[in-house]
Image 1 (cartoon, rainbow, N blue to C red):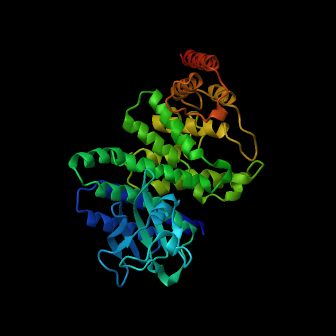
Image 2: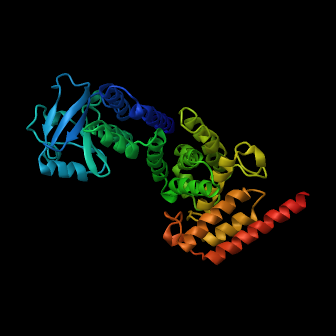
Image 3: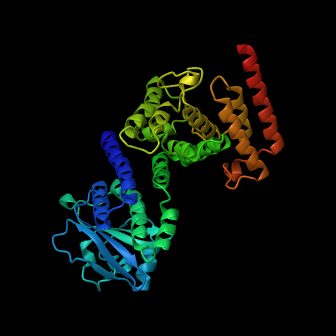
Length: 414
């Protein structure tokens, strides 16, 4: 079962990677729509599907591409009443249709019967309806189970961006403006995609909810405080989102165990770095460092980490940053076997283990961002409000302690 889940996960990651170039490709939109619809069908296991765009005046769904249906008008048209627009806009994620719900979401006044569809997913951008993907039957008349719906929902968000981009054709100026906001670059697509994926990784394990998102946020903040280039910061954020992707292959029971893991369980837990590396190595990301960060985020400067026992400079800077962000969030989060540390206590512990285990420059950058949180100068705070328990003076004292340790270490080495 784990092997099958891994294959499905890998297919969805690859599909996300494939959709990025499709969204930014300079080609006839019908060709792009066909590729996107094929990708969605494969991820959801559907044999029939239609991609609709939505227009407001009049409120109408118009098919852009359809595949698999034996008889379907071209274009297929579904007029919508205000109540249909409202329910589609308010819906969260894919909707399984049945005899009691067809009329809630779709009208029967067009040239296509809503009863052909088994599942629909509204395509929304910034809370506004841009279109709909409707899925028909699956092979063997199978129902759409949870993993198929998860993949459908994840991919549909990015199809929505493409549909929105396509419908903004009134003027060149408007098109360029909206393109810059919605699809400023391929990196923007991946950032949204991987944020959704980070949530999907953590949701399987009740004790680590939000962990990957926070590691991405902390990694980004450290990179920004170090003055790194925007592309490198984006790489850190994305790697943070994906660093624990290998945990999808780890027995959920291990995350809930209130006592220390035995040797075999520890080995299974550690394997998530290697499995994660295998997964992301199959995907062509805009940031080539992601696979090595996923593999090495549990390495430590003194060689005590895993899976390869790297030392110091053998670890790229990006790896050292994500390793620190991962440890900081682990320390400040509850676990079945211990309560969370306060931010101050966690930082003290990280300072104690620097520079032997953790990169002192990365830790110094984290302290800068925590101090900005303390005085309220961060535009977007990196710490959740309930975690912040330090004053600026407290952070200055921690920074002074770190500088002393760095100086002592240099003195010892000379």
